[in-house]
Image (cartoon, rainbow, N blue to C red; front, side, top):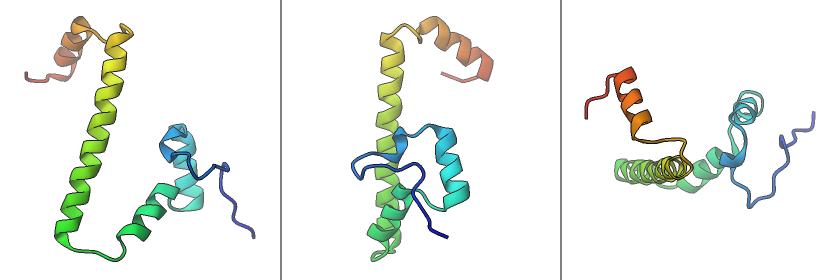
Length: 96
């Protein structure tokens, strides 16, 4: 049985551009995502604890930046404002 990429992507495209449902389907039915495969290959040579901690910091910073960008976009578009933040804080009992 021939294994094909689902759906086909150019190398320059990022897996994060896929809808979440498609990503889940890919993982469930086709194993690791292209991003996961790439990271396994890159880091297969160095398995030290220090490298693992460095990678964790980099990944955290990457997703923190993405989240900040999305929150700023929502704020600029009027989707998110102080009133909505206060509602969320009350709903989820966030301290602040």
